[in-house]
Image (cartoon, helix red, strand yellow):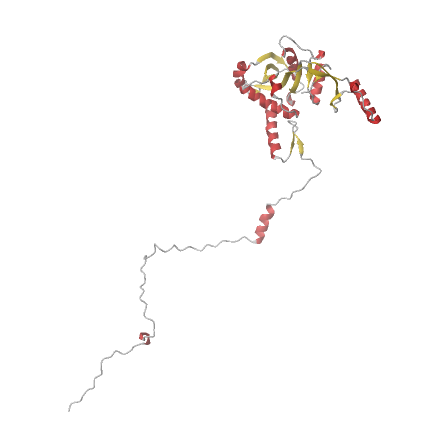
Length: 330
């Protein structure tokens, strides 16, 4: 009898729990190959480390940039330059800029060169005196031209007058005065350039009509005594006994009566390094001799007058005019 062998159906057994329905399906993403998608990804940044300064270092840097300011109420901010004599406010940008420009022109001085000589004949420049000798032995020349001249000479004259007005603390001359005036310049050869000359003196001569006689020192003392007596008595004084005060500091008084006078000197200037050489006297003598053609003027006869002079101008007026120079209002 043959044995019957039982056979079972070939079912696959569950080998591991991962194939159960409750488990998540296997990932279908594939691993990217090297280089794929690199162009769309931003480059990786390296981390940089910075050192922060310590609090002690910051404190030291702040302390090194600090400055202590002090207010000096007793010290004046007004300065007077010993070179050019200009008074300016120290610390004010406009004043300091003006002082630098003015002092530079005064130190260098103004020159008369070939450019001016080319226009001399056209501008009507006349040589009044050649080989004019100074006290120190140097020789120069005196030229003259109208004050309302134009061109390059007119531009140089405008800068020269601006320098003179600043040095004398005087207002600028009006166009009416310039039209009736002449300019007298004293020129000496330049030490640095043989083709140029230095302007070492300037006189502006103006045609005027009347001026006042300067009171004598004895009359000035009587005027002061009269003023003191009038102040004590408090009574009005007679106009005929009063003098016109021009400069009380220097004691300059004038008689109020206006007398005919043909020549006025509104500006007179000589740089400080060229003073005491007789430049101002030579310029004034040249102006008195040639201002009116064919009619020389004499200061002793009262033919010349000054405007309100400075201390130096008052001394020149007394020495050159010997008491005959008058005073007129500009």
